[in-house]
Image (cartoon, rainbow over all chains, first blue to last red):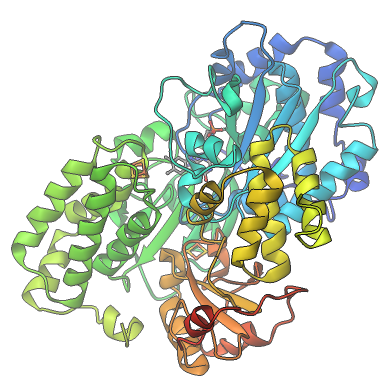
Amino acid sequence: MGSALPNRHYLLRQRDVADVHQLAVYREHGGYTALQQALQANQPDQLVELAKASGLRGRGGAGFPTGMKWSFLPKDGRARVLVINADEGEPGTFKDRELIEGNPHQLIEGMIITCFAIGAPESYVYIRGEFLHGYERLTAAIREAEEAGILGEHVMGYDFSHRMFVYRGAGAYICGEETALLESLEGKRGNPRSKPPFPAVAGLYGRPTVVNNVETIMNLPPLVLEGADWYRQWGTEKSPGLKVMSVSGHVNRPGNYEVPLDWTLAELIEAAGGVRTGHAVKAVIPGGSSMPCMPASQLDTPIDYESLVQAGSMLGSGGCIVMDDSTCIVRAVARVVRFYRNESCGKCTPCREGTYWLTDIMDRLERGDGEMRDLDTLLDVSDNINGKAFCALGDAAVGFLVSALKHFREEFVEHITGQRCPLGARQYDTVNH
Amino acid sequence: MSEHKWPAEWQEWAEASRATFPNAQSSLMPFLHRVRTQRGWLPPEALDAAADLLGMTRQHVDSVVSFYTLFRSEATGRRTVHVCLGLSCMMAGADTLMENLEQDLGIAEGQTTRDGAVTLLEAECLAACDLAPACQVNLVYRGPVAPEAYRELLEMPVPEPDAWAPPTTPEAREATHRG
Ligand SMILES: Cc1cc2nc3c(=O)[nH]c(=O)nc-3n(C[C@H](O)[C@H](O)[C@H](O)COP(=O)(O)O)c2cc1C
Ligand code: SF4
Ligand code: FES
């Protein structure tokens, strides 16, 4: 059993407080007092230490320790830049959208605190182009903050000035990768850059840059107010705190759930109303479609970063996709590899060509036209992408496929020997394709 | 030289974009978004205007436009319906929803109706899997949309381009009328 749920939301504040996206309401409920405390104390380094002590880890996918990331900035006197990754395109993940739409001021407050900590006079939010409502909410909140003297010259009257910009993406999953994001923010095609140099050394326009996810930075205001020990009451030693998990697929109440990181997958699914009535769980992808799937026998796994890795998957962005026993795994895999084929930026051959071949073979298998040797080819092609592609999209493209072949191989074989889907999924869903 | 060549609002937007972002390079995508919202898509003259007003080559503008799915240089209807076919939406019947729309509109995914009213497009995960099957109409979310309730998407009120650009060349018209 994981730790008890707190009796309030710390990130999804809109669940407890109506209209908290408005500055007046946000302030009535303690908004911007953390920022004021931080500016009053005037000890930027202590804020970096606080982030380190809390054990907060990046919520964008890689789970990198946030305070450590900030301390990689070279101490060479150059002005730093904070870029917020609000591109949220990882299939199964929808937390940043709800956080931005419902609680934009907490993001702004977290950003200013972070920028004060690292010494950044400017920050950017790179927001997914499709998030029109979120964009409008966020720009309106920034305007409110500017008018109230929370942004601009002398933030809240203190000796710190800050400008914030919002930049819209335009439909490209790869722009969630941090270096592709920086290219796009510079007005170019979103092709990933080679690392090194890392963004901390040469990021946006060559400046020292920190890229952090929306949810990561929204943890700062409560952290400043409550402290590192408070944060560590949830989760594990290495994965402390609360995480907003997006639960979708065959559950009774799909949605975002802000839960302690020591909960199990089973507890999370229970919180989301349980699996569809009359069905049993077949497989779960715990962290967005880039992560390997886990069979029902592993539902007792806790969702902290380490436990999920040990179980053969990853927490990723926290997009938990639940598939019940009516799901055709072959069809699900076909859909996911097609996503990566569509979204491959085309820069490197293993990913560009490999995702094409995988899609081709998976479509054939799904139609019932596959042959046994296709299964070996799938693994061969995956091997040639995994670890050999220019950016992490390559590895992401094969995680679900390889894990599905491991846990549900017999289902692939049945599609070949029976020359059709044993579950009839195709007949039901894709009449004309 | 560019003073009289382009609509006044385009000149204003170009200037506003350049003023908003400290680095001029970053002004391209914000400018394109504004024109896209106004016209429904990016007609060729908009791409020329972007190059001219922002001091870039047309080649650079084209290379950027072709990378992003929301920047369409192909004639697009007044109403763009994006149906998410991502995994969670697929499990909720998104493919059937798409087929129902195709049949009703008499067009295939990727096409525009003859009268220019609707463009039907497939979307990847729209980060709204809690609303599966999820859709966007002119970037306004709708969901869950049951496959048989597809007409909602054609009838719901949404902001439309206030100066929609109908296709201008015979080739472009042909492309639009493909359905
Ligand atoms: C293909 C790909 C897509 C990604 N998409 C996102 C995204 O949409 N949002 C995000 O925050 N991070 C995304 N990431 C991770 C970012 O590269 C980066 O690690 C993250 O924004 C860092 O922030 P964090 O340390 O706060 O997690 C993606 C990575 C890859 C390889
Ligand atoms: S791995 Fe794929 S997305 Fe990444 S650089 Fe290569 S082609 Fe582009
Ligand atoms: S799969 Fe459709 S919104 Fe995520």
